[in-house]
Length: 64
Image (cartoon, rainbow, N blue to C red):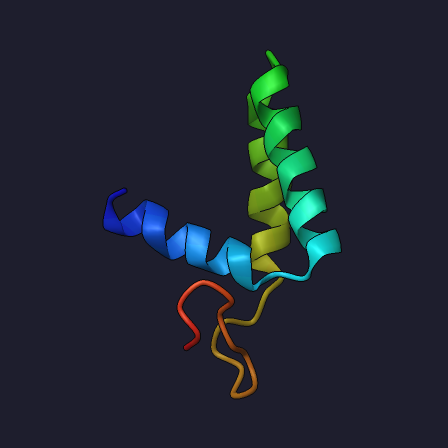
C-alpha cells in the first residue's frame, strides 16, 4: 500500500466498529452509484464544517 492508503486505513482502524460500518456503507454507496458527484459534494460540504484548526481536534488518520 502507498502512504495515502496506509494513512487512511490507519484512521479506519482507529474508528469504533459502528463508525467503520457506516464508512463502509458510504463507500459502497459511492461505488454502487452512477451519480457520484452528489455524494462527493455532500461529503465535501460536511468536511467543510469540521474545524481542523480547533485546539481539541485530533485526526483519526494521523493522530495529530
